Length: 303
Image (cartoon, rainbow, N blue to C red; front, side, top):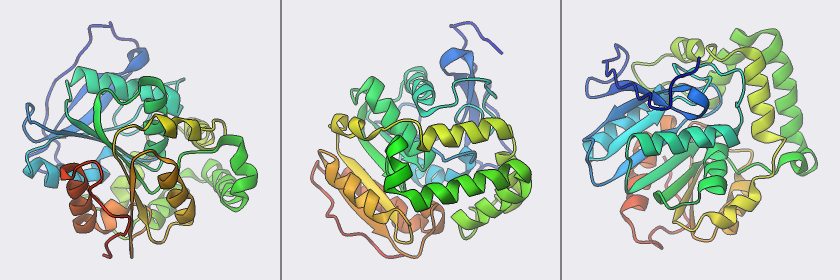
């Protein structure tokens, strides 16, 4: 559905599954798509935080960060990327490069200032694509959560085991999307943040059409080498990895390639590290935001 360029829908509504201090609304993304987001904290706060979730995962997965950073006085936004959650299902533009344009619109429309941009999993690809296109002028700091930026076609040889696993999973996803999605949610986290359940997360993930979901993941991982964008990360960047990550070394290498990066590994947490270890994650991210450019060491906490 297309909307006029002046479209800016701010029909705030309380969600029955959201924390009472969290509201939700829609704003215009690129190409006329409607982007759904959750919001907490004062709108005119001196610091803001934009949280981008992973592949087909609802923004509600950030519940523990929305509550925590909202209580710390941040203006917190967690967005559903296009074709995910309650955002518009788009027939095109389901790539990190297009989603980066949605991120730029969200930042502009909501007038987010002194911003820390956080991307997890697929969201890390969106952040890399955003910096590649728009630079870091609107950002104070950046955080990449448990995902190296894609090497594109080079990953077929450089991380062949991972690519094989992903492609095998896509076959199962195409055949039995509900069973695959439920298994995925149970694999990437130990337990959802209350009041979410695996059932609700699975239901949210199934809002993305299967053919769109397949094309999204291929575009995320195999089509574009986003490593050159790392040279443009000229603001302090935090890399937080799960100690259980199969791509732990790749994330360490990414942190070393970034101009001004700090690396933290959190043990005993799965891919959704911020869900499994919210206290360590929130404190680590807050300390990074509060710190000067060279604040954190490269060692990480244990959860």
